[in-house]
Length: 242
Ligand code: C5P
Image (cartoon, rainbow, N blue to C red; front, side, top):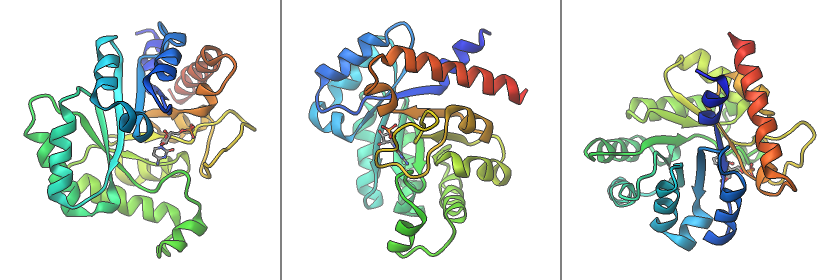
């Protein structure tokens, strides 16, 4: 297969916009290139299921990043409710605990065409200091591994982590979990609120399955050029691993 087609499956653009209009304007600018878009809280709370259906009707895969975190019954019902819109990936917070994760996994398993669930471990915006601030004194990698194990034991097949932990997770958890890595930046690019960042090359080398890129593409003067540059990095990093 053309390695660029595989790489397109690995590169997800985060549509972090306040309404459908600017989001779909960016989608137009990347049409013919990008296959995967992420809809997060900002856009979903503004537009609801319709934005996901619109993207699906236009032939795109949708990663619905709602980071569900509530009591098990509520999260299970939310998984059922939101799955009707046709997203391929859906996030829950691993910090919700074993029972919440298991309830989410069971709810998805009972659906006819469920999204693949991903558990968010520790947000890529969090530093070691912030982890201590919420009462976690474990090292970042250990905490991410702990939450990752909790999610996999609950039959959640994928994890969201930073590139810093991806290699460590691969060593401990093997090749099967889907590892989705946000916090991707060009070398020297603006971090914004992110702390644990990496280039696309570094994240793929560390074992990421998919990369999530928001502002470096959405705020670029030429989003299509940045998308293509990241795609090239993925192709080269993947061939470097073979
Ligand atoms: O603009 P930027 O590239 O930092 O966007 C990263 C995207 O990935 C955002 O939509 C953010 O919500 C999401 N995300 C993250 N860290 C996580 C999980 C999701 O940055 N742990």
